[in-house]
Image (cartoon, rainbow, N blue to C red; front, top):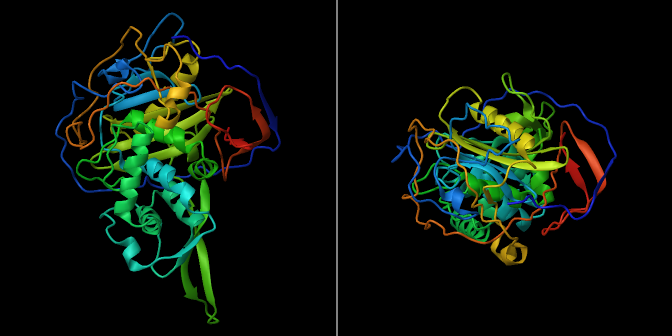
Length: 432
């Protein structure tokens, strides 16, 4: 399948300089620490073919034609995907539709569903019922009862610290956890993310709660159309309101404390460098899911999405290391490799954006293997959502990457005059 061509030029006006950013070493947040057994360590024989028939096949799908770099040799994740965020082309994938526990990467769907509902300046005073039902061992940002927070504060807690307490407060504002879960499942269906079944809005391990590398990539792609989503997911550090107290003089005061993003490709760590061009998106880690991560990065005008689920290799920060290697491969292979499938558009736009030859039915399969040690996650038999059939929908989506805090470059007045089917904000901001 030939790569899609941009029909107009791009022009970018750089209006500010690079700001400094701290290399942070806080521990990875966990949505859940409770154990959960895995029914299977291998992908099912039948998986969804949404986005193309090859994406429903097990093992690695890639067309290694002449001039295409070989994939990294040391990938151990159960499932992964490399896709062009703008065209929607899937450059390579491994068990893309394997339905696995998603951990806190599911918060991307939570944010994409709820972000439009509340202005960032809306305030909410937390009551005890708002924090009911949070799972033991959950990652928390530190929300206190009887304190008032802005929606902006709460979303920073969700994205930076993966705070399940912030998720539950926002869910309470939205009519409760059950209503939020229902809306998330409806939104997943609209996005054609049919591998996904939501039980908890925060990604805490739950029976039948499943997603896939393919679906998580759809959530990121959809969320990145929203300016506030881009800003939150790419914020390196922020101030979060603390508890109201009285000082020595008896005056009521409320100080703040710093929170840092737990996305190691965005912040760096002792064994992981900040990835060039990274701009989000979301990490997760639970007993059942293992480590999961979806990232977005831009290099030389090309924007890629990579999702990695549950590396078998249990080294420190392994999910970020494998993601970085897949990003490197994707940027080297883009424009040379024939796609093996596509990221479909939401139902409302699919028919208008279909393009010929986008079923991902090319030949050539490299790799195989299940890449798993059986250390926990569900299979397609656990959820109640049926395995999806093939669709003719197409991506054709443009992603503007927003950056807030830390190391940023502002590209003001940028005219991305390419053939996009979803609107972009006037202000394009990107991390380099």
